[in-house]
Length: 322
Image 1 (tube, rainbow, N blue to C red):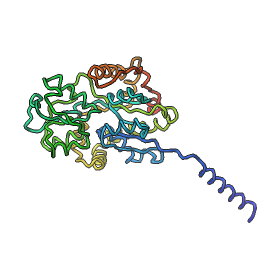
Image 2 (cartoon, one colour):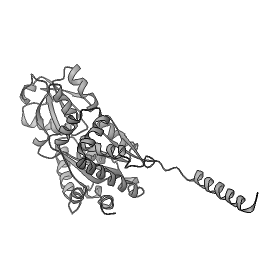
Image 3 (tube, rainbow, N blue to C red):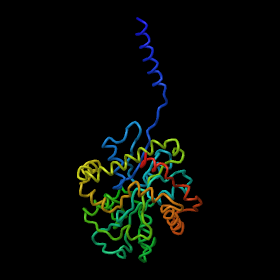
Image 4 (tube, helix red, strand yellow):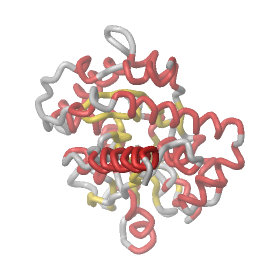
């Protein structure tokens, strides 16, 4: 073996030794329950925008499952409603709100069987809802608008993945649901009694990051956000193709997903940054109003956290401008 060949072999051995000894970098885990605009994360993955070695996307069955996974550290990023964020913070979970995704514009609703014509018809009937999600706020609004209460209706915990079966197979008369399940119930004959447009405070959905990873994974998180918004841009330019792709994954007809998206207000990256910026920011004011309401309604324990400390614009700024 001549000297040059020996050096080449030695170099290759050294290279592969160093690679094999490099610490394994666990992919960033991102979780969401079914909701139309969260789907752009999965579209980004299907379009090849996300490096599978860097990101692991998990669609969980319900909002409750997402909350539990984030609480136990199984998720690094999570798509959550603002009330769910406040619930986690009240439990002592360290997190940062890094973007504002959308607002429900009728996407959360109470759907009833055909014989229930109005909210008042629910007296002595049953309601199913997911207690740890925005559904609790909608249920409270129903009680505010009527003489209904815990004693005049039967309440059942029904997670979003259980809604269709609950409607078809059980004696539950009305269900508080989210899109795209709302569209599926409409196709089964259900009709709407009240929706999120009638709430005194909006249902806002955000993206949060675990506090202990916020600085360590800043570049990785900002890249995820960049590709999330890139997928939404693809949807705007190639709507039919994007709807087909997302619908196949969700096992829905494209028109159902299109109708579901119409009941939301997507907030683009620059608008999201605007809502996170300022002192106080608009999202901080909304969170403060929501926490006050939730405490008043006994949906939230004592909340002592400074809400401004939960908000960061740095990662979204990188996603937009770098």
